[in-house]
Length: 89
Image (tube, rainbow, N blue to C red):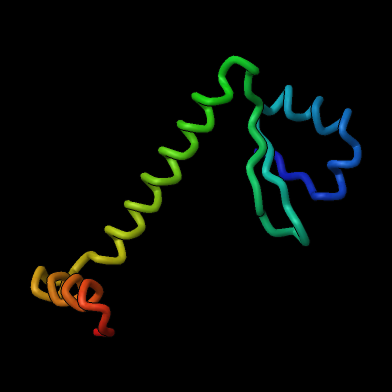
């Protein structure tokens, strides 16, 4: 995985060459990852965006399940009821 800084985007020819070689780049700001740049084909834009969205959703669901591990069904029901009624649990 190749990391590039925001300032390297100004060197677009180099960035495009690296992207062609690596197929994906991690864009950083102040040394911290912030975005993923993927090589895509013009014909595959919609399919690629849909696949990335599915992957991000799946990751979110997995994280939520991990946070909920060990929570009793009664506690889940209490939280759901509280949210539906607009009160804080």
